[in-house]
Length: 501
Image (cartoon, rainbow, N blue to C red; front, side, top):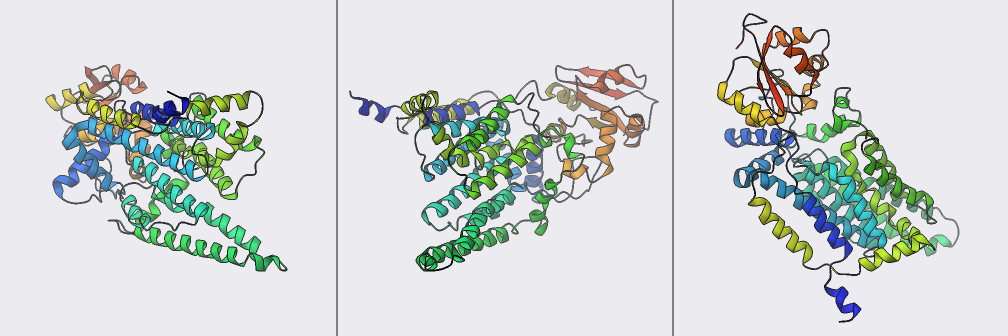
Protein backbone atom coordinates (compact mmCIF):
# COMPACT_ATOMS: atom_id res chain seq x y z
CA UNK A 1 0.00 0.00 0.00
CA UNK A 2 1.55 3.31 -1.05
CA UNK A 3 1.65 6.50 0.96
CA UNK A 4 -1.22 8.12 -0.97
CA UNK A 5 -3.60 5.21 -0.40
CA UNK A 6 -2.75 5.15 3.30
CA UNK A 7 -3.53 8.85 3.65
CA UNK A 8 -6.86 8.38 1.87
CA UNK A 9 -8.37 6.34 4.70
CA UNK A 10 -6.60 7.48 7.83
CA UNK A 11 -8.13 10.40 9.77
CA UNK A 12 -6.50 13.79 9.51
CA UNK A 13 -5.39 15.74 12.54
CA UNK A 14 -8.36 18.13 12.26
CA UNK A 15 -10.84 15.24 12.32
CA UNK A 16 -9.06 13.70 15.28
CA UNK A 17 -9.23 17.03 17.13
CA UNK A 18 -12.97 17.29 16.45
CA UNK A 19 -13.55 13.76 17.73
CA UNK A 20 -11.57 14.41 20.91
CA UNK A 21 -13.34 17.73 21.40
CA UNK A 22 -16.72 16.00 21.17
CA UNK A 23 -15.68 13.46 23.81
CA UNK A 24 -14.34 16.21 26.08
CA UNK A 25 -17.75 17.94 25.96
CA UNK A 26 -19.50 14.85 27.33
CA UNK A 27 -18.44 15.65 30.88
CA UNK A 28 -21.02 15.85 33.68
CA UNK A 29 -23.27 18.83 34.26
CA UNK A 30 -21.53 21.49 36.37
CA UNK A 31 -23.57 24.55 35.42
CA UNK A 32 -26.05 25.93 37.92
CA UNK A 33 -28.12 27.97 35.45
CA UNK A 34 -29.21 24.91 33.47
CA UNK A 35 -31.69 24.20 36.26
CA UNK A 36 -32.95 27.79 36.19
CA UNK A 37 -33.86 27.45 32.52
CA UNK A 38 -35.47 24.06 33.04
CA UNK A 39 -37.53 25.46 35.94
CA UNK A 40 -38.78 28.27 33.70
CA UNK A 41 -39.43 25.79 30.88
CA UNK A 42 -41.44 23.57 33.22
CA UNK A 43 -43.55 26.49 34.38
CA UNK A 44 -44.27 27.62 30.81
CA UNK A 45 -45.06 24.05 29.80
CA UNK A 46 -47.50 23.61 32.69
CA UNK A 47 -49.18 27.03 32.47
CA UNK A 48 -49.11 27.50 28.70
CA UNK A 49 -47.86 31.08 29.14
CA UNK A 50 -44.53 32.75 28.43
CA UNK A 51 -43.02 34.23 31.58
CA UNK A 52 -43.06 38.00 32.00
CA UNK A 53 -42.87 38.32 35.79
CA UNK A 54 -40.81 36.59 38.45
CA UNK A 55 -42.55 33.75 40.28
CA UNK A 56 -39.51 31.92 41.65
CA UNK A 57 -38.24 34.20 44.42
CA UNK A 58 -39.65 35.67 47.62
CA UNK A 59 -37.41 38.75 47.39
CA UNK A 60 -38.63 40.24 44.08
CA UNK A 61 -41.96 38.46 43.44
CA UNK A 62 -43.77 39.89 40.45
CA UNK A 63 -40.71 41.79 39.20
CA UNK A 64 -40.42 42.30 35.45
CA UNK A 65 -38.44 39.50 33.80
CA UNK A 66 -37.51 39.94 30.15
CA UNK A 67 -36.76 36.30 29.55
CA UNK A 68 -35.28 36.38 26.07
CA UNK A 69 -34.20 32.75 26.48
CA UNK A 70 -37.75 31.45 26.87
CA UNK A 71 -37.64 29.23 23.77
CA UNK A 72 -34.36 27.63 24.87
CA UNK A 73 -35.95 26.97 28.27
CA UNK A 74 -38.86 25.13 26.67
CA UNK A 75 -36.46 23.12 24.52
CA UNK A 76 -34.29 22.27 27.54
CA UNK A 77 -37.26 21.04 29.55
CA UNK A 78 -38.54 19.03 26.60
CA UNK A 79 -35.17 17.31 26.15
CA UNK A 80 -34.94 16.70 29.89
CA UNK A 81 -38.41 15.16 29.92
CA UNK A 82 -37.42 12.70 27.18
CA UNK A 83 -33.73 11.99 27.82
CA UNK A 84 -32.99 13.42 31.26
CA UNK A 85 -29.91 15.43 32.12
CA UNK A 86 -27.81 13.28 29.80
CA UNK A 87 -29.86 14.52 26.86
CA UNK A 88 -28.71 18.06 27.64
CA UNK A 89 -25.11 16.86 27.91
CA UNK A 90 -25.37 15.30 24.46
CA UNK A 91 -26.94 18.44 22.99
CA UNK A 92 -24.03 20.46 24.35
CA UNK A 93 -21.41 18.16 22.82
CA UNK A 94 -23.12 18.02 19.42
CA UNK A 95 -23.61 21.79 19.16
CA UNK A 96 -20.09 22.65 20.30
CA UNK A 97 -18.60 20.16 17.82
CA UNK A 98 -20.86 21.45 15.02
CA UNK A 99 -19.63 24.98 15.76
CA UNK A 100 -16.01 23.88 15.36
CA UNK A 101 -16.90 22.10 12.11
CA UNK A 102 -18.37 25.35 10.75
CA UNK A 103 -15.18 27.09 11.84
CA UNK A 104 -13.17 24.63 9.73
CA UNK A 105 -15.40 25.55 6.79
CA UNK A 106 -14.58 29.20 7.44
CA UNK A 107 -10.87 28.35 7.40
CA UNK A 108 -11.36 26.63 4.03
CA UNK A 109 -13.05 29.76 2.63
CA UNK A 110 -9.98 31.74 3.57
CA UNK A 111 -7.72 29.35 1.67
CA UNK A 112 -6.49 27.24 4.58
CA UNK A 113 -8.26 23.92 4.29
CA UNK A 114 -5.17 21.95 5.25
CA UNK A 115 -1.82 22.48 6.85
CA UNK A 116 -0.51 23.65 10.21
CA UNK A 117 -2.32 27.00 10.29
CA UNK A 118 -5.91 25.65 10.46
CA UNK A 119 -4.86 22.90 12.88
CA UNK A 120 -3.33 25.40 15.33
CA UNK A 121 -6.19 27.89 14.92
CA UNK A 122 -8.77 25.14 15.47
CA UNK A 123 -6.98 23.91 18.57
CA UNK A 124 -6.85 27.48 19.93
CA UNK A 125 -10.58 27.95 19.35
CA UNK A 126 -11.36 24.66 21.07
CA UNK A 127 -9.22 25.44 24.11
CA UNK A 128 -10.68 28.94 24.45
CA UNK A 129 -14.27 27.70 24.23
CA UNK A 130 -14.00 24.79 26.67
CA UNK A 131 -14.87 26.90 29.70
CA UNK A 132 -18.18 27.91 28.07
CA UNK A 133 -19.07 24.39 26.92
CA UNK A 134 -22.07 24.33 29.24
CA UNK A 135 -25.69 23.20 28.91
CA UNK A 136 -26.98 26.73 28.39
CA UNK A 137 -28.71 28.78 25.65
CA UNK A 138 -25.44 30.38 24.60
CA UNK A 139 -24.69 27.15 22.71
CA UNK A 140 -26.96 28.53 20.00
CA UNK A 141 -25.09 31.83 19.96
CA UNK A 142 -21.77 30.05 19.42
CA UNK A 143 -23.14 28.02 16.48
CA UNK A 144 -25.20 30.79 14.87
CA UNK A 145 -22.37 33.32 15.16
CA UNK A 146 -20.01 30.90 13.41
CA UNK A 147 -22.57 30.52 10.60
CA UNK A 148 -23.04 34.29 10.21
CA UNK A 149 -19.30 34.95 9.98
CA UNK A 150 -19.01 32.04 7.50
CA UNK A 151 -21.71 33.48 5.20
CA UNK A 152 -20.32 37.01 5.41
CA UNK A 153 -16.83 35.76 4.58
CA UNK A 154 -18.18 33.71 1.66
CA UNK A 155 -19.82 36.82 0.22
CA UNK A 156 -16.61 38.77 0.72
CA UNK A 157 -14.40 36.14 -0.94
CA UNK A 158 -16.54 34.76 -3.74
CA UNK A 159 -19.36 37.23 -4.25
CA UNK A 160 -21.99 34.69 -3.13
CA UNK A 161 -25.15 36.43 -1.97
CA UNK A 162 -25.98 36.21 1.70
CA UNK A 163 -28.63 33.50 2.24
CA UNK A 164 -32.07 34.63 3.37
CA UNK A 165 -31.83 31.80 5.88
CA UNK A 166 -30.12 34.38 8.08
CA UNK A 167 -33.45 36.15 8.66
CA UNK A 168 -35.41 33.27 10.24
CA UNK A 169 -32.27 32.29 12.17
CA UNK A 170 -32.21 35.80 13.65
CA UNK A 171 -35.88 35.57 14.57
CA UNK A 172 -35.22 32.22 16.27
CA UNK A 173 -32.00 33.47 17.85
CA UNK A 174 -33.70 36.47 19.49
CA UNK A 175 -36.03 34.08 21.31
CA UNK A 176 -33.21 31.80 22.46
CA UNK A 177 -30.33 33.97 23.68
CA UNK A 178 -29.35 37.62 23.93
CA UNK A 179 -26.17 36.87 21.97
CA UNK A 180 -28.15 37.51 18.77
CA UNK A 181 -26.77 41.04 18.98
CA UNK A 182 -23.34 39.60 18.08
CA UNK A 183 -24.80 38.26 14.85
CA UNK A 184 -25.93 41.76 13.90
CA UNK A 185 -22.62 43.31 14.94
CA UNK A 186 -20.71 40.76 12.81
CA UNK A 187 -21.87 42.68 9.74
CA UNK A 188 -19.94 45.73 10.95
CA UNK A 189 -16.30 44.87 10.16
CA UNK A 190 -17.24 43.65 6.67
CA UNK A 191 -19.26 46.78 5.94
CA UNK A 192 -16.55 49.07 7.29
CA UNK A 193 -13.94 47.40 5.09
CA UNK A 194 -16.16 47.54 2.00
CA UNK A 195 -17.03 51.20 2.54
CA UNK A 196 -13.36 52.02 3.05
CA UNK A 197 -12.40 50.28 -0.20
CA UNK A 198 -15.28 52.01 -2.01
CA UNK A 199 -14.16 55.44 -0.83
CA UNK A 200 -10.57 54.70 -1.79
CA UNK A 201 -11.47 53.44 -5.27
CA UNK A 202 -14.35 55.81 -6.02
CA UNK A 203 -12.35 58.96 -5.57
CA UNK A 204 -9.30 58.01 -7.55
CA UNK A 205 -8.43 60.60 -10.17
CA UNK A 206 -7.71 60.16 -13.84
CA UNK A 207 -8.23 57.13 -16.10
CA UNK A 208 -7.70 54.70 -13.22
CA UNK A 209 -11.27 55.36 -12.11
CA UNK A 210 -12.62 54.15 -15.47
CA UNK A 211 -10.65 50.93 -15.17
CA UNK A 212 -12.12 50.35 -11.70
CA UNK A 213 -15.75 51.17 -12.63
CA UNK A 214 -16.92 47.53 -12.70
CA UNK A 215 -15.15 46.80 -9.43
CA UNK A 216 -16.85 49.79 -7.80
CA UNK A 217 -20.29 48.76 -9.06
CA UNK A 218 -19.79 45.24 -7.69
CA UNK A 219 -18.63 46.69 -4.40
CA UNK A 220 -21.65 48.96 -4.19
CA UNK A 221 -23.92 46.00 -4.87
CA UNK A 222 -22.32 44.02 -2.06
CA UNK A 223 -22.72 46.93 0.35
CA UNK A 224 -26.40 47.27 -0.57
CA UNK A 225 -26.99 43.54 -0.12
CA UNK A 226 -25.27 43.53 3.25
CA UNK A 227 -27.24 46.53 4.49
CA UNK A 228 -30.49 45.01 3.25
CA UNK A 229 -29.78 41.72 5.01
CA UNK A 230 -28.72 43.51 8.18
CA UNK A 231 -31.95 45.50 8.23
CA UNK A 232 -34.01 42.35 7.59
CA UNK A 233 -32.22 40.46 10.37
CA UNK A 234 -32.67 43.33 12.81
CA UNK A 235 -36.37 43.52 11.97
CA UNK A 236 -36.71 39.75 12.43
CA UNK A 237 -35.49 40.01 16.02
CA UNK A 238 -38.63 41.99 16.87
CA UNK A 239 -40.74 38.85 16.47
CA UNK A 240 -40.61 37.91 20.13
CA UNK A 241 -42.91 38.19 23.16
CA UNK A 242 -41.17 41.30 24.46
CA UNK A 243 -40.91 43.34 21.26
CA UNK A 244 -38.32 46.13 21.18
CA UNK A 245 -37.25 45.32 24.76
CA UNK A 246 -35.53 42.18 23.50
CA UNK A 247 -33.51 44.15 20.96
CA UNK A 248 -32.44 46.65 23.62
CA UNK A 249 -31.87 44.08 26.34
CA UNK A 250 -28.29 43.04 25.36
CA UNK A 251 -27.18 46.68 25.48
CA UNK A 252 -27.24 46.64 29.28
CA UNK A 253 -24.26 44.29 29.18
CA UNK A 254 -22.19 46.92 27.37
CA UNK A 255 -21.77 48.57 30.77
CA UNK A 256 -22.37 45.87 33.41
CA UNK A 257 -23.73 47.01 36.73
CA UNK A 258 -21.49 46.78 39.83
CA UNK A 259 -23.58 43.82 40.93
CA UNK A 260 -22.92 41.91 37.72
CA UNK A 261 -19.20 42.38 38.20
CA UNK A 262 -19.51 40.38 41.41
CA UNK A 263 -20.31 37.29 39.32
CA UNK A 264 -17.30 35.27 38.18
CA UNK A 265 -18.37 34.79 34.56
CA UNK A 266 -18.85 38.54 34.13
CA UNK A 267 -15.45 39.34 35.63
CA UNK A 268 -12.25 39.81 33.65
CA UNK A 269 -10.14 36.66 33.17
CA UNK A 270 -7.88 35.80 36.07
CA UNK A 271 -4.76 34.87 34.13
CA UNK A 272 -3.13 33.50 37.26
CA UNK A 273 -5.67 30.68 37.03
CA UNK A 274 -6.54 30.75 33.32
CA UNK A 275 -3.04 30.33 31.99
CA UNK A 276 -4.16 28.35 28.95
CA UNK A 277 -6.52 31.11 27.78
CA UNK A 278 -3.74 33.65 28.21
CA UNK A 279 -1.37 31.47 26.17
CA UNK A 280 -3.93 31.15 23.37
CA UNK A 281 -4.51 34.90 23.19
CA UNK A 282 -0.80 35.70 23.27
CA UNK A 283 -0.01 33.12 20.59
CA UNK A 284 -2.69 34.30 18.14
CA UNK A 285 -2.13 38.01 18.69
CA UNK A 286 1.63 37.41 18.55
CA UNK A 287 1.21 35.72 15.17
CA UNK A 288 -0.51 38.86 13.91
CA UNK A 289 2.15 41.20 15.28
CA UNK A 290 5.15 39.20 14.10
CA UNK A 291 3.84 38.30 10.66
CA UNK A 292 5.27 39.76 7.49
CA UNK A 293 1.75 40.01 6.06
CA UNK A 294 -0.53 43.00 6.47
CA UNK A 295 -3.69 42.71 8.55
CA UNK A 296 -6.97 43.17 6.69
CA UNK A 297 -9.16 45.97 8.08
CA UNK A 298 -12.06 43.69 8.99
CA UNK A 299 -9.67 41.26 10.70
CA UNK A 300 -8.16 44.03 12.76
CA UNK A 301 -11.61 45.17 13.89
CA UNK A 302 -12.64 41.62 14.78
CA UNK A 303 -9.46 41.04 16.80
CA UNK A 304 -9.75 44.31 18.73
CA UNK A 305 -13.46 43.77 19.43
CA UNK A 306 -12.90 40.18 20.58
CA UNK A 307 -9.93 41.13 22.74
CA UNK A 308 -11.98 43.87 24.43
CA UNK A 309 -14.95 41.58 25.08
CA UNK A 310 -12.79 38.71 26.37
CA UNK A 311 -10.78 40.95 28.68
CA UNK A 312 -14.02 42.48 29.96
CA UNK A 313 -15.75 39.16 30.76
CA UNK A 314 -14.30 35.66 30.74
CA UNK A 315 -17.61 34.28 29.43
CA UNK A 316 -16.74 35.83 26.04
CA UNK A 317 -13.67 33.62 25.54
CA UNK A 318 -15.49 31.65 22.81
CA UNK A 319 -15.02 34.69 20.51
CA UNK A 320 -11.52 33.39 19.82
CA UNK A 321 -13.23 31.00 17.39
CA UNK A 322 -15.31 33.22 15.07
CA UNK A 323 -13.30 36.46 15.44
CA UNK A 324 -9.62 35.89 16.24
CA UNK A 325 -8.76 32.45 14.85
CA UNK A 326 -9.80 33.21 11.21
CA UNK A 327 -7.95 36.51 11.31
CA UNK A 328 -4.75 34.76 12.38
CA UNK A 329 -4.68 32.10 9.62
CA UNK A 330 -2.51 33.89 7.07
CA UNK A 331 -0.11 34.95 9.79
CA UNK A 332 0.16 31.49 11.31
CA UNK A 333 0.82 30.11 7.82
CA UNK A 334 3.54 32.72 7.37
CA UNK A 335 5.14 31.65 10.66
CA UNK A 336 5.20 27.96 9.69
CA UNK A 337 6.92 28.70 6.35
CA UNK A 338 9.92 30.33 8.00
CA UNK A 339 13.23 28.46 7.96
CA UNK A 340 14.44 26.53 10.96
CA UNK A 341 12.25 25.18 13.74
CA UNK A 342 8.98 26.87 12.63
CA UNK A 343 9.29 25.36 9.15
CA UNK A 344 10.12 21.89 10.46
CA UNK A 345 7.23 22.06 12.92
CA UNK A 346 4.86 23.18 10.18
CA UNK A 347 5.87 20.31 7.90
CA UNK A 348 5.38 17.83 10.74
CA UNK A 349 1.90 19.11 11.52
CA UNK A 350 1.05 19.16 7.82
CA UNK A 351 2.15 15.55 7.46
CA UNK A 352 -0.13 14.48 10.32
CA UNK A 353 -3.05 16.27 8.68
CA UNK A 354 -2.78 14.61 5.26
CA UNK A 355 -5.64 12.24 5.98
CA UNK A 356 -9.16 13.04 4.85
CA UNK A 357 -12.37 13.35 6.77
CA UNK A 358 -13.89 9.93 7.02
CA UNK A 359 -15.78 7.81 9.48
CA UNK A 360 -13.85 8.58 12.68
CA UNK A 361 -15.94 11.61 13.68
CA UNK A 362 -19.23 9.92 12.77
CA UNK A 363 -18.35 6.77 14.72
CA UNK A 364 -17.23 8.86 17.70
CA UNK A 365 -20.46 10.86 17.76
CA UNK A 366 -22.67 7.78 17.42
CA UNK A 367 -20.75 5.73 20.02
CA UNK A 368 -20.53 8.68 22.42
CA UNK A 369 -24.25 9.39 22.07
CA UNK A 370 -25.24 5.79 22.81
CA UNK A 371 -22.89 5.68 25.78
CA UNK A 372 -24.15 8.93 27.31
CA UNK A 373 -27.85 8.21 26.84
CA UNK A 374 -27.47 4.81 28.46
CA UNK A 375 -25.28 5.86 31.39
CA UNK A 376 -26.35 7.12 34.86
CA UNK A 377 -27.17 10.82 35.20
CA UNK A 378 -24.04 12.80 34.48
CA UNK A 379 -24.25 15.37 37.27
CA UNK A 380 -21.22 16.53 39.22
CA UNK A 381 -21.73 15.36 42.81
CA UNK A 382 -19.34 18.04 44.05
CA UNK A 383 -21.34 20.98 42.69
CA UNK A 384 -24.96 20.59 43.71
CA UNK A 385 -26.63 20.38 47.16
CA UNK A 386 -28.47 17.17 46.32
CA UNK A 387 -28.48 15.77 49.87
CA UNK A 388 -29.55 19.05 51.48
CA UNK A 389 -32.39 19.47 48.98
CA UNK A 390 -33.58 15.91 49.69
CA UNK A 391 -33.60 16.68 53.44
CA UNK A 392 -35.63 19.87 52.96
CA UNK A 393 -38.11 18.19 50.62
CA UNK A 394 -38.65 15.47 53.21
CA UNK A 395 -38.83 17.60 56.37
CA UNK A 396 -40.30 20.88 55.07
CA UNK A 397 -39.29 23.16 57.99
CA UNK A 398 -41.13 26.53 58.10
CA UNK A 399 -39.60 29.85 57.07
CA UNK A 400 -38.38 31.59 53.97
CA UNK A 401 -35.11 30.57 52.37
CA UNK A 402 -31.73 32.26 52.20
CA UNK A 403 -29.53 30.44 49.72
CA UNK A 404 -26.13 30.42 48.08
CA UNK A 405 -26.18 32.43 44.84
CA UNK A 406 -24.78 29.52 42.84
CA UNK A 407 -27.39 27.11 44.20
CA UNK A 408 -30.31 29.33 43.19
CA UNK A 409 -31.07 27.78 39.80
CA UNK A 410 -30.76 24.22 41.12
CA UNK A 411 -33.18 25.04 43.96
CA UNK A 412 -35.70 26.60 41.57
CA UNK A 413 -36.02 23.29 39.76
CA UNK A 414 -35.51 20.77 42.57
CA UNK A 415 -36.92 22.62 45.61
CA UNK A 416 -39.97 24.46 44.27
CA UNK A 417 -41.66 24.54 47.70
CA UNK A 418 -39.13 27.17 48.83
CA UNK A 419 -38.94 30.31 46.65
CA UNK A 420 -35.29 31.37 46.42
CA UNK A 421 -33.65 34.46 47.87
CA UNK A 422 -31.48 34.95 44.77
CA UNK A 423 -30.40 32.99 41.71
CA UNK A 424 -28.49 33.45 38.44
CA UNK A 425 -30.86 36.12 37.09
CA UNK A 426 -28.64 38.93 38.28
CA UNK A 427 -30.23 41.27 35.70
CA UNK A 428 -33.55 40.89 37.55
CA UNK A 429 -32.24 41.18 41.11
CA UNK A 430 -29.76 44.00 40.47
CA UNK A 431 -32.65 46.36 39.59
CA UNK A 432 -33.99 45.94 43.10
CA UNK A 433 -32.67 46.06 46.63
CA UNK A 434 -32.63 42.27 46.88
CA UNK A 435 -29.17 41.77 45.39
CA UNK A 436 -27.49 44.37 47.60
CA UNK A 437 -29.25 42.77 50.57
CA UNK A 438 -27.94 39.38 49.49
CA UNK A 439 -24.38 40.74 49.34
CA UNK A 440 -24.83 42.32 52.79
CA UNK A 441 -25.49 38.88 54.27
CA UNK A 442 -22.99 37.08 52.07
CA UNK A 443 -20.18 39.42 53.09
CA UNK A 444 -21.30 39.39 56.74
CA UNK A 445 -21.95 43.10 56.73
CA UNK A 446 -23.15 45.03 59.76
CA UNK A 447 -26.81 44.60 58.76
CA UNK A 448 -26.79 40.89 57.95
CA UNK A 449 -29.19 39.96 60.78
CA UNK A 450 -31.53 42.83 59.95
CA UNK A 451 -31.72 41.64 56.33
CA UNK A 452 -32.62 38.07 57.29
CA UNK A 453 -35.24 39.39 59.74
CA UNK A 454 -36.77 41.75 57.18
CA UNK A 455 -37.24 38.98 54.63
CA UNK A 456 -38.54 36.53 57.23
CA UNK A 457 -35.75 34.03 56.58
CA UNK A 458 -36.06 30.90 58.69
CA UNK A 459 -34.02 28.47 56.57
CA UNK A 460 -30.45 28.96 55.34
CA UNK A 461 -28.89 26.65 52.74
CA UNK A 462 -25.32 27.50 51.81
CA UNK A 463 -22.13 25.84 50.66
CA UNK A 464 -19.89 24.23 53.27
CA UNK A 465 -16.94 26.56 52.73
CA UNK A 466 -18.72 29.87 53.20
CA UNK A 467 -17.94 32.20 56.13
CA UNK A 468 -21.65 32.42 56.90
CA UNK A 469 -21.55 28.74 57.93
CA UNK A 470 -18.98 29.43 60.65
CA UNK A 471 -20.93 32.44 61.94
CA UNK A 472 -24.31 30.69 62.09
CA UNK A 473 -22.66 27.66 63.67
CA UNK A 474 -21.89 29.66 66.85
CA UNK A 475 -24.91 31.98 66.76
CA UNK A 476 -27.51 31.31 69.46
CA UNK A 477 -30.37 32.11 67.10
CA UNK A 478 -29.54 29.42 64.56
CA UNK A 479 -29.24 25.65 64.65
CA UNK A 480 -27.42 23.41 62.18
CA UNK A 481 -29.89 20.66 61.26
CA UNK A 482 -28.19 19.08 58.26
CA UNK A 483 -24.63 18.85 56.98
CA UNK A 484 -23.82 17.13 53.73
CA UNK A 485 -20.72 16.91 51.56
CA UNK A 486 -21.66 20.04 49.61
CA UNK A 487 -24.09 22.14 51.66
CA UNK A 488 -25.29 22.91 55.17
CA UNK A 489 -28.83 23.71 56.35
CA UNK A 490 -29.54 26.01 59.33
CA UNK A 491 -32.92 26.68 60.92
CA UNK A 492 -33.84 29.70 63.01
CA UNK A 493 -34.43 28.76 66.64
CA UNK A 494 -37.86 29.39 68.10
CA UNK A 495 -38.16 32.82 69.68
CA UNK A 496 -35.49 34.49 67.55
CA UNK A 497 -36.41 36.87 64.80
CA UNK A 498 -39.79 37.29 63.05
CA UNK A 499 -42.52 34.70 63.10
CA UNK A 500 -41.77 31.89 60.68
CA UNK A 501 -44.11 31.12 57.81
